[in-house]
Length: 483
Ligand code: ZN
Image (cartoon, rainbow, N blue to C red):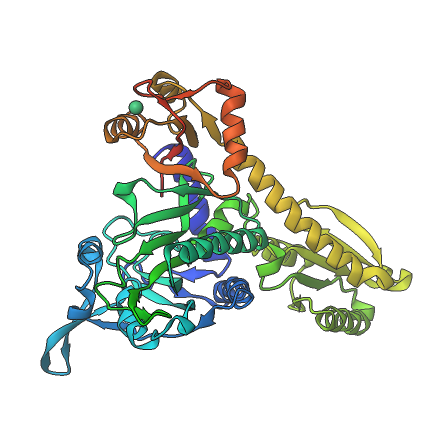
């Protein structure tokens, strides 16, 4: 770990603790306690996910936490991938179980035996469900709040389709959902098609969703998988076609986790603490009364009125009427990332104004009471755009183009590296060793055109050549050190 990374993690751990996001003192490693403010933030992220899923006709379900061993073992690649990560339940009371149960690491093997009962004819397709639950993975590396934990707050969508093409359409829809959700969270991201050796256990292919953290390493925020019929065959998920013949369904999944919280903290935070995107901030506005001994009640009453007006307009507003100096309150809410602060003192009351302060820029404005709601809404939009813009600029600046392994050596550890790759395992291995990094995969999704043009603008228009062996190729890949 570099000094810079260590500094980041110290900052990150302090903020999580001081801003009441999570408590790591629970006596099981990697299983943290969500504190009220952090849980509110997480539920608001979940709400963004639920809205996106409901608007694309996915239905929410909730499957059991425990999965029987025999059901888990049906898809050979899947069990190989997860075997070393699962927690087992071996006893019920004093009795040893005949068939051990495991805590879900993900829910394919919980859901698919039921899908085989639910799907009968083509009229039952597509089947599109999702759940927001906790999953368990025995993580052996150093745990980090929200980023590497053993109990994971998890979102997973599972779909079944008549054929491969319809499953591919689902993946396109998933990519649009990713774009919508990330926009609300103001998080820039890259989509990469993971190399075969790094795809999800049992998948035909995997698309990774990554963002760049201030450490210069990428953080995988989620993934989308095309399963083809890899699970439907062992789990017997079949439908009857028009002609009476039976066909196995094609399946996809799309997953994200509480890493979104870690990314929001890391990507947007600054030296004062959290900077929360307005869409998911537990409080979008905090109202701070500036009291003078003689007219305390009037100011407090007016602040309550302001809070009511904001709430009626659908804005999450909190009034801080604790017996503390205003400066302490500013510090408290700045650290918690509240997007806007309203200050109201006797003089503002007289002139029918409030003072509005932005967390992201520190900008301070005098706003007339009549324009308060519209100005607050306007600035919440501006904060969202600004957070996304500045994070996207950092991500784009963090992508370095290289066209030879020597170039790669020079920029190792400086973010994400974009290079042409012939597709051979040997070349991938060489570049991973030289950079001490992992291949994220081939450019995919809506940002791939941008990065293709970026590559051409630096290397030139001709045929791309593998940065390691020099063979002609059209594959452009990202490589980065990852969390
Ligand atoms: Zn090569």
